[in-house]
Image (cartoon, rainbow, N blue to C red):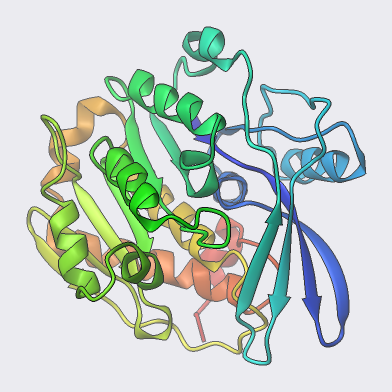
Length: 312
């Protein structure tokens, strides 16, 4: 069982041709991406007892994502995405993030979990961020932990606060993915790859096994204890970039699971993944992101689509 914990919301996408609504939220997108790649996955997040909440639940269930939490009485969170002429998205948010009572249910909800992923707003916004950290700390002795900060400066405006939270989760994670924009915001004036390399030194007793940086058209780069690797980004006609990083994250994790590298008992093998294996994972994940940017909204590929896509 794979578990994703974090925010789910509705993306209201505004472009010159009109307005559309898509279910989104970075962790939710990763959960859908993993399910479409044929992994059993549950999503721990909140959504309201309203029309948007109904669409969130229906979207997750349509991709066979399990929902251990039902709707609550708060409004479903909304992100408004303004798409420019190049297909890039700029976001504003109206959201609530809390998971009341989850602490008493962690043992039940996380039993059998071999990989726990989280990130983005869920790891920074109070009061829910405290519950997410507790879930990560609870799962760490048994599960692979993955983290994507997916920073939202329009919500968390204090970069020092964000940096502290990000580094807290990096120090607990086995796999970390960030965009070059995330790193440039968190560490202004520093080379983004040097910042990523420094993350490899964080950790209490164990440090991240892998840090990956997505760089848009420049293609992804990554580092493990065995070395560094990068690959070109596939060339595609871009519809928009909504959900591209989340599709990349899901496919990266899917590749690790397919190689039997999930679960705390496999941490040593994960750390010893050679640079050649890292390069294969990066190319696989970049291919998934390319499929997503070729069509509107956060719409990650299925395993059949990914295996059949040339990336051209």
